[in-house]
Image (cartoon, rainbow, N blue to C red; front, top):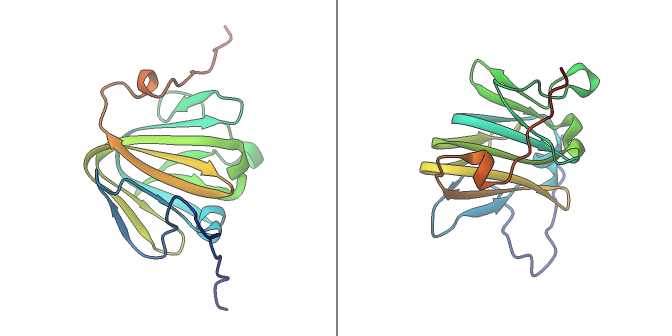
Length: 154
């Protein structure tokens, strides 16, 4: 069955990728199609640190905090190949931030988006699309991106 095509409105400021992309300082941003943004999983490889911020503006660091699991499936989780982002509950995610060397995002259709070299990679949900931006690597993601950690009840 052929994949439905999405046509981006004329004058869109960010290109929608239809093929593999390497994000650089000169061309740091792309968007996934609505299809790639909403079906299956995203696999993130090469990340040393990953945070997910939910729509209530609470951020969870993978490996440190208990990540929300709506429908008995965590929003993000470690996998043998990297970090899996389940897109089933994507409307509960505000943004996702990963840092590492040659961070690569693989969509369920096999499209690769790579942030070359050491970089922070930020994924924001914009009008139903994942917008992926490469930024200069920073030593403290939580401070740089104003991530609010969950309050632990004792």
